[in-house]
Image 1 (cartoon, rainbow, N blue to C red):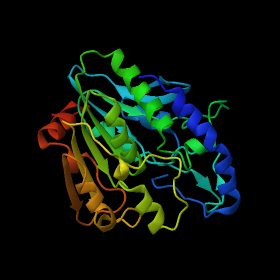
Image 2: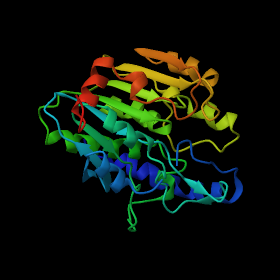
Image 3: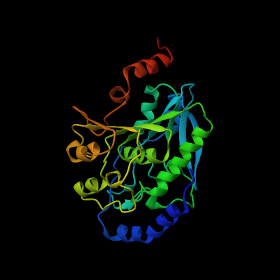
Length: 288
């Protein structure tokens, strides 16, 4: 998949609006978890460090090979788009606590951790713009870039014929949108996901994500995709009662509220089939 010029131009046209909002609007805080040492965490989980091409961006990724034809692809939450209590745009939005990366060790078979444009980087990139991790964090440009990166990964693994996208928090928004442009994806697991981003910004009194796509406003959805959505009963960031209706409106949706869970809900022990969990445990060093 190529990143369209329309998406690039569309984001560029919105840049003046970004700076107007920065000076006058109520600013956002991140929707997802916030750690360091992704390389060390990935190494401890037996993952490989790699870079994927996502149009004008290089996307940080981690993966583990496997002969199976089905792969799981993980997308982290929004991280830290803002700092200083939501008053200043972060220079680096990378999450500090990588919840989805930790989940990968619980899942058997081929796995990929797919980073977002401009995350996990300490080098200046002329293609990066704060709009990509603030108001445009779910923009067409971001979605197209990640789709291109995923296709880049799949191109070298022709034995993989189906994919489950797993996204936490805002990563779940991207997983839902990303599945529409990658035909090999046949399942989405969206965890603690603000399915309607207008509702989410409104309930927290944040400035609307005016440069982003909203899953609740999509006119059509690809058929044949199972969409499973999980909410923590005690989640204050994405309270289930505010999003269940929008979640159930998605075609092929299966919605579950997990008792006693908060925003960190829900790992593979909740959404992965028992036989797959057994396979993951037995494949670890020292497993039976």
